[in-house]
Every structure is written in structure tokens, then in C-alpha cells.
Length: 212
Image 1 (cartoon, rainbow, N blue to C red):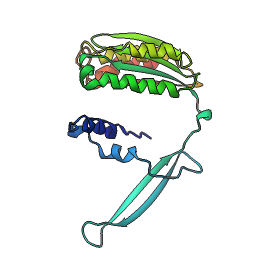
Image 2 (image 1 turned 120 degrees about the vertical axis):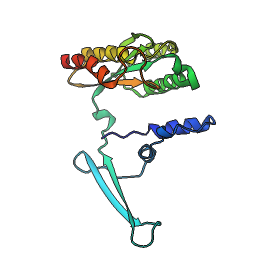
Image 3 (image 1 turned 180 degrees about the vertical axis):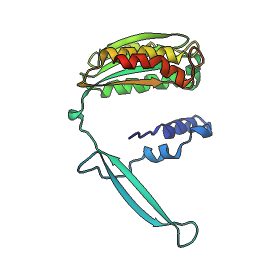
């Protein structure tokens, strides 16, 4: 199940900077998901469902409000598979605004500190063109990964399709049955160079997925 909390974090950053967030970026479900509601995990199965209700303070005595909480199963760190994480990072000119690229760099540095030594990190960047910045590198080579992250700088247009293609090609080469392999796109907006529509980008990437 997808649990996204980004909207709350983005809105908080806007407010701290003295700006109102874009209305479309405020998503109620992501605000709700941001907080820990103390739901108990499942004793068996993938998730547990908890339901409670109370009289509504709106509309008299008859309406009731019902809350449905879903808590997924937590997997202990030692039980998780090793991971190969391929980050496809937008370094176009717009990423220099409001220190967006700086936020990505700080977040990746924090992530590297939390990874197990056996995890791997690969980095693909794209502005006007896509390029490989870092081949998948074990997390115990932290200095090499941080050096690549520190080298990120904004400039150019937004050729997301080329960056994603390189990212998926890297992921397919490294994919193994006993590892988790993920491609993560870090960007502030939509593509404006090359293939820009989601269907068009998927059409470009699909042959790579079939090879995997």
C-alpha cells in the first residue's frame, strides 16, 4: 500500500519560508498519513484494519463519523533484503530555485547514513541531457557517494525521459532476485525537453523493463 507524506513536508517548508503552498500541493490524506496514529500492526497477514466511530459534532445527533485505520506489517531491519537504489535526479535550472537541489542533497546525505553497508546507491542526473554520475556503489563507500552528491549543481532544461531511461537501464543490469531494486525520481516538475508526456516516457522505458 502506498503511504505518502510528502504534502505535509512540502507545505511546512513553504510556511517556514514565509510563503503559502500551492493549493494543488495540499493533499489531506498525506497530512493524515504524516502522523503516527498508534495503530497496532497485524498479528498475521499483510495489514490490520481498525475501525472506530463517534457522534459527529456537525448536523445534530444522528450523523456519526467513522475512522478506518490501516496498518501494514512492519519488517525488522535484519529481515529486509539488501537494496539497490537508483536515484534519477533533476538538475535542471529550476532546481536552483528555493534551494530545491540543496534539499535533495541534504536528504540523500541523511539517507546514506541510514543504509546498511551491503546496500548500493547509483545516481543518474538530467538537465538538457541525461548522464550517469555514479554507478551503483556499496554504501560502505560513503565518501565516494557523498562526493557525487556534493557535485550536484543546477543548469539546463528538463529531459526527464533520457534520465529515466538511463536509470532503468542501470537498474536492470543490477537487478537480482535476492535484492530489492528501485528507481527513484527526484524532481520539482514536468519535463520540457525530449519526450514529455507520461505515456510517451513509458513507451521509451518499457523495452528496458522487458529485458529485465
